[in-house]
Image (spheres, chains in turn orange, blue):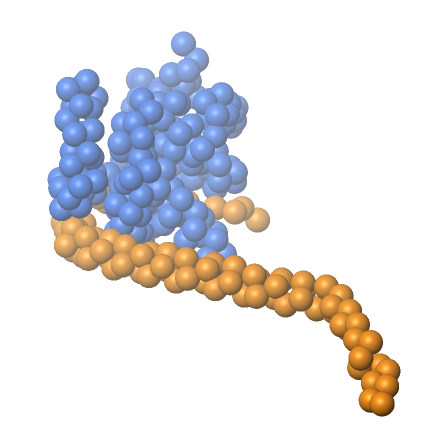
Length: 88
Length: 189
């Protein structure tokens, strides 16, 4: 089965039918609308990237904090471990 | 296209980048050609109207990216239009339609085979059957070559293929046409 369909037009194309599609005002309007949407998407993407970067930084800093060994307990002072000798 | 026309067109494009209203002049110049190019590949006036508008919206959206590379501005528009048509058929998933004017076929065959007089109806029908079985890529090249009068360099740019690829597709199609219908073509000289 063929992939294409060939239609034979008996009449020559005239400029009359085309006039109802010629509307530069509508094209301009759609262009402005799409431009606005593109700008919104760009701003949204920018903030999304910033949010992802901040989230990653927070996660990394938390993981780092968890992996670093806790500080060893401070040495007990002599005076604290042995009772002071009674005063004579 | 004369050098002066190309320069004027480039100035207009430059102006359109700053002020999209200026693009209206280019729209008026090329709308008909783009509309008929799409109509020949869809066979439906409403679809051709929609896709033509989309072509110009896309052109306006991407005007910043346009660079003059030795092709007329119309070639860039045709390329966008061809992409829109392809997108349309990808969405539709149907058969690709080529709507050809009968007068144009007669004109072309008379042009390629002088002195044969009128083409009979049977031969036209046979030719249509033959064209129907050609691969879409070949039909696209033939359409641009014979219905839009584009040279191979421009065809290659519009369809995003190499110039030798465009020539090969055309000559192969014409070769088959020659064998099937036993007619003399202008390439036979």
